[in-house]
Image (cartoon, rainbow, N blue to C red):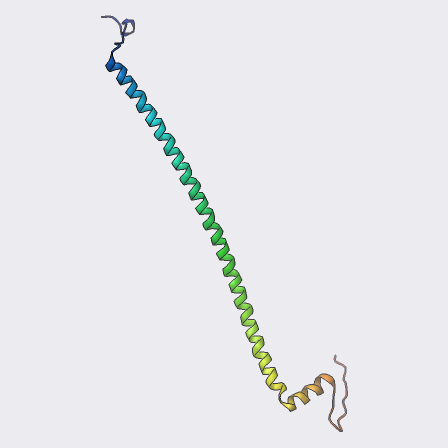
Length: 123
């Protein structure tokens, strides 16, 4: 028996072999086109998902900023409510003549008739 390498193989040139070769080439072209389309679709999907992710991230940051701002404004509102309560109490007191007289004597060193005011040095 002869070794395989020394044998000569001849190819048949018939319509059948020619058609089979063309079919194989067509399959390769279709497969290559399929891979290209799948790659393109994957890249488009990746780009869209990146855009959506970045929008969600931006919106989440904006929401966090709004929440912080809301908390700060609520604190400021509570402080202003407290100040309003104090001011309303002061208005009620200022409508009382005795309170106004006492305030004038303490703050502006005014006196009633016959009173003498002595200013002492604070230590």
